[in-house]
Image (tube, rainbow, N blue to C red; front, side):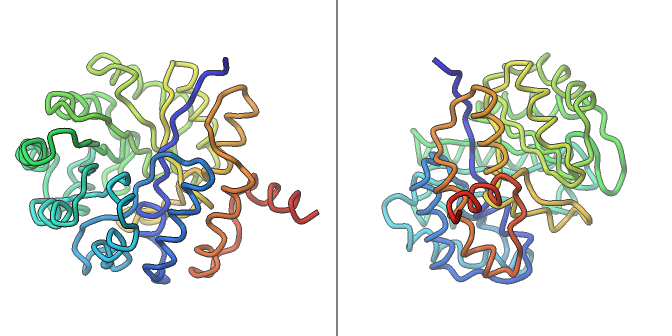
Length: 301
């Protein structure tokens, strides 16, 4: 049997948060339903962040309501106590907490140093576990290779944050190559440091494709035994706090490359290629993913 790879779809949250054109709530909900329909099993739907900081996420509560009972299946980002309270009011059962390996980036993004954020998160995780015993918690570690404000990040710093999240007993730790600048050797260096403090199975990789190296980095860590990746349908995204960062690796490109290489994703590429089209149109973006372009051309032909 082909080895299975887990794909976490982050387009509705991480993908859309950097798009200037505000997408209607109903269209976001349709997008998520289309992703589910293509076989995507895990979706990060929204963020309970300040609307002033990220206007695209101002409708988080409305989106959860629109999604109905299945909303609890999605993951939502909670940056602080207020975010957690709002998420719990909406019935969230899967949450994500976001920090970085760089103090400068963490302060710019969430208004805290890395250590301050981890102290806050310990309390938030404890509260969440008490109120949602069977809930799911993800810890995001951004800028694992380079920070847009201070440059190269030592792999040992990444490992230190991973170790802190592991001590909180989170279910999943996502390592974000936020700027999309890394090449496989750099990613391997991060992996080696992280493997000294955490199991491969507890890690998800989150690559941006600013310079076209995301898939190369995916295969570099696949060779090390990693089997979990974040991606964004249509290659949507970037980062509002990382000037110049390109979109996430496109889910279509990731699915095509993995399936072609003999891995199993459980996702229908034809249906996936169609899922993001209304959203791309709403934000005024052309189709960015090569695999999406090819799949759509094949269907049309």
